[in-house]
Image (tube, rainbow, N blue to C red; front, side):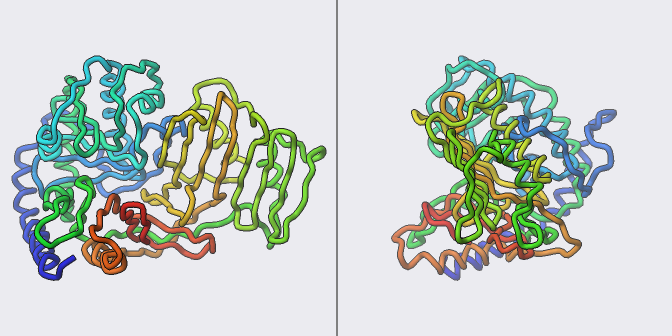
Length: 441
């Protein structure tokens, strides 16, 4: 990124930040609805929201409440106290809207961006869905949906629901009186927050201008301040005193229907323990990587929808291994070879990323589990805060690293995350950046 443009961007962000206080005062004078309050003095607090894994499959990673002011947007992560309340209302509206697939109409960029810059609730998912896959996660069986993918949903103040991706947007006309009170009360409860959130399209970062050959996806969130989170220590529950933890091992093999007494087992040179049975091969490495590969059909899953079957299996494994981290669906695909579900762990409201794998991956075909992998990890949150570099610095570093080998750099994702290198060292919050098909950390 050119130096002059960086200076201009920083100046713009500083100006916007300085406008926040004055604008917040205006918001506070206007946006309180007498006698109606969704929230109970939870500002800046944290709690562990309790959701079943089945619920998390259709749950966003984060929610942005747009107040209609560019310098007054509020972000809610999974561990924020108000997340559950906002998500509960949003999910009911979305479920009702997606139950009416014949009402879906194609719309344009102008309508999409207007909804985002006006009063609305924006739900950001780490996974991309087709509408039919997303509807199945909601428990809706109707398949009369457009053939597209999306990872963003916007609910306008009047209740209209938008979804789509660049150049391909859809709207479901809907009416709800619950969105406006949420926006009004969020504005009041969080009026003292000074960090400014912009979308890439606000600052034209999504456009190639002049000699500039770096563009950002329009929905990337641009933070005016560095991100702060407590450091996290990952623990491998598969190992105890330098050896495979027998208690954890027994629970894991049971979850996959393996009989330790009859299965053929052996230890590989790197310490990995392998069990072989007729339906597949189960392996646990010293790094805590659990994998299952099917022979033939694989393992028949319990009754229910595909998503609920996967959720039940993951819940069982996590209970047996003592894993209680939140999970977020990071990938969901459906094809001729079956359905693939991938998950990230969520700690301190941020995803935990691995260099070449998802935290959990499961493939199902015709009701049978044919492949499964999981990085077995427990997480301890320390009392030491870590702070990321600022957005522009992180962006400029990745541009310097990759720009020489690319005629045009297109950044598709950029968000705060933790990075687990499997060494069990303390993790600090940093930026996850996807550059087309190149991952930069």
